[in-house]
Amino acid sequence: MKRSVTLALALLAATALPVAAQSTLRVKPSGDVRITDPHLGSDSMARNMGYMVYDTLFAVDDQLRIRPQMAESHEVLEGGRVWRFRLREGLVFQDGSPVTAADVVASLRRWAQNDGLGQQLIARGAVFEAEGANAFTLTLNTPWGMVLEALGKPAAPVPFIMPERLAQTPANRPVPEVLGSGPYRFVANEWRAGDRLVFARHAGYRPRGEAAAGLSGGRVARFDRVEWLIMPDQQTAIDALRKGEIDIAEDIPADLLSVLRRDRNITVANQDDLGVAQQIRLNTTQPPFNNPVLRQALLHAVNGQDFLSAVTTDPSQGRVCNSFYVCSSPYHSTAGWPSVNLDRARQLVRESGYDGTPVVFLNAAENTNINAFTLVADQLFRSIGLRTDVQAMDWATVVARRQSREPVARGGWSVFISGPGGLDMMEPVSHLGLRSNCDRAWFGWPCDEEIERLRAAFADTPDEARKREIAAQIQARALQTVPYIPIGVQYQLRAHRANLTGLLNPPAPVYWNVSRR
Image (cartoon, rainbow, N blue to C red):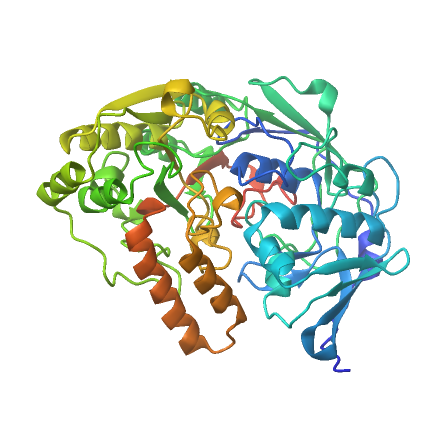
C-alpha cells in the first residue's frame, strides 16, 4: 500500500488558551436567512450562517490551498482507492457531546447527495465508514484526484459536520435543529425571522493553533455574541453604521460609497478577492425557457456591461466575462461566444415559436444589484419580443420560491438573478451553473447527458492539457444548451467601523478573529 504525506496538527498547546470575549458584534448581512439547513441547497445565506455554527474537515486558506481543519491527518492507500482520516482531539458539539467519526460519516453521506462534487464521489462508489471514535475511511471504486477538494470545498452546499442524529435526516428535508461544533452556536429562541439572528460564543470550541488564513486556521470567537440584523433598506443600514449602532454592513451599493469613504470612522473594502459571478438563471423545465432556441436568443441579447453600468461606474468593481468560467479561472475562454446582436435575438425568438407565455422574474428588490439587473433584463427581454412579469419580493422569498417546479400560471418562475461566489464557477466539476444532471442540478434544473459525460471525464483526467480541452468542449456544448446567461464578475463591498481589526476576506464572509480596539 502506498502512503501519502500526513497532514499533522501543530501547536496543540495553544488551542487550550482561553479567549477573552468582547461583548456583541452587530452585522447587517447581505440578505435574510430562510433556509437554516446548509446541506439542503446552494443558498449563500445558509452557507454564511453555516460557517458561524459548523466546522469542516478541511478548509481553503487565503491562497485557496486545502488545509486540515477538523482533520488531524489523512493517508491515501491502495493507489488512491482508500482514504483514511483521523480527527483532531477535543472536538465537541455545542450541546457538549463529543464529535465522533460516526457523526462525520453520516454528515458526509447526507451532504454528498446534494452537492456536485459529492455526487461525483457517489458515482465512484464512495463508501464512508467509521473506524472507532476518531477515524474513518472513504473507499472508492476507482482513484479520484479531487477528494480533498470535495471535502474542503468552501462553496454551498459546504460539507459541514453535524451530529449523526441530525445527519440522518433525509437529504431533501431540513434538519430539525441547528447544531454544529463551530466557534458560535445559533441561539434559536432569539431568532426573529426578517429581523435578527443571534449567535453566542461556543465555550467548548478549541481553535486550531495556526493563524487564521482564508477559511482555515484558528477560528477564534472574540465576541460573546454576534447579531445579524436584517435591514432591507440600505440607507437605514448606512445610517446605523455611521452612528455606531451596527459594526459591519455587507454588500454596499455603489451610490452610497462616496458618503462612507468620507467618514473617517468607516472603512470600505472588497468583501473577498474573487467576486461573485452574476448571472441570469433560467428555468429550463417550464415554458417559455424549456425551449433551447429561446435560451440561445438571450445569448445574443445580453451585454453584461449594460447590466454592470446600472450599478457602478467604477470599472474596478466589476468586469464582463463572456464565458461560462469566471475571468479568474484557468479555463476561462471567450471561444465561440456570440456577439451581441439584437436583430439576431429577435429572429431566434420568432424561430422558437414563442407563444407569449409570460417570463416571470423573481426580483429580490431589497438587493440593490439584483433589483437593478432585473430591471435591465426586463427591458431587454421586452425589446426582443418577450412578455414579462416582474414580481418583487425579498431574497429569502426568492430562495423559497425558486424551488417551485410549477408552470408560471401556478406560481412558478422563469428567471432569477443571482451572484454565486467565483469559486462556484471556476472549473467544471464543482461548477454550480453548468451542472446538468436534471433534478439534481441547481435551480432551473438543466438536463444534458453530454455535459455530464464531459464533467465526469474532466474529473478523471490528471493531464492539465486534456482538462483544458474538456473544459472547452463543455463550454461549446453549453452554448447550445444554455443553462444560464453570464452577466459578469462583480466585487461586493463591505463597510465596517474603523475600530475593528482582524476581518478576513475569504470566499464567504466570516466573523471569527474580529476584534474591537
